[in-house]
Length: 288
Ligand SMILES: [Mn+2]
View 1 (cartoon, rainbow, N blue to C red):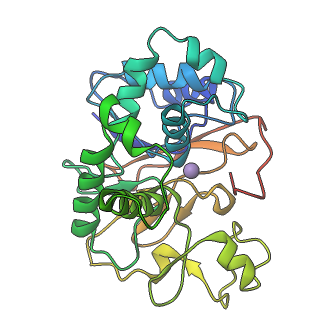
View 2 (view 1 turned 180 degrees about the vertical axis):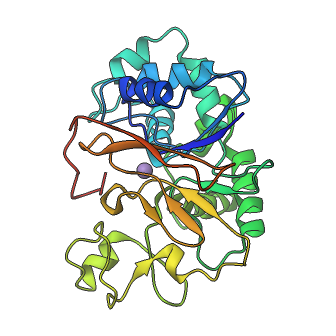
């Protein structure tokens, strides 16, 4: 019995099968924890969702920003313009089942067996992990399930005359963005988005920042308690990245890098990775 965390798959289903083969994965015995971004960029997004959904509830998936994009498009009633699998998705007979499942994926998880925390991008540097988990759960209650998601993911009404409930939804949105998209933080723990980093003179806000850069990776700013450990994905340009309290698993599989699995129940077990063709060039506007 093994517990594996797996990095951003991005529709690279053949590579995922290859990785699971290398792990001698047994769906009845082992457990998989995916850090999110199962879809988009790569060739088999829908099949990837189906495959992971069909693994059953022993296995878990964290909500990634690309899953959020799918939910937003659905709530807007619009097909995606940038992702070619959207037509296939709209015709899929199991679309609502998958959509309902995706909308219920957690923003953050504490794995009961290993005590390890997982989120797609990370968490607010100033929040305790308990606080972060509580917030993630509260947002999940607002956004999970077909009925809730249509409201939660609809475009925000930013008018000052909007209903006060809209302000709550805006705050929940901002917090959701942290879990699914954070990379940089100011040294006082304030999250920093790429446009601000660019304005401050960081030439590529998606690249690993220099030691003396004004903004640093969120996990470097955060004060960690002795036994805390978090696994995340999302930062493909950083590559596989281990610190005493964190492990970044996005090793850029869809960008010609690797798809990576680590054993959470045996941290010293060697990392397993498979190479992936370059299906997509890193997008300098969104960092992937
Ligand atoms: Mn991501």
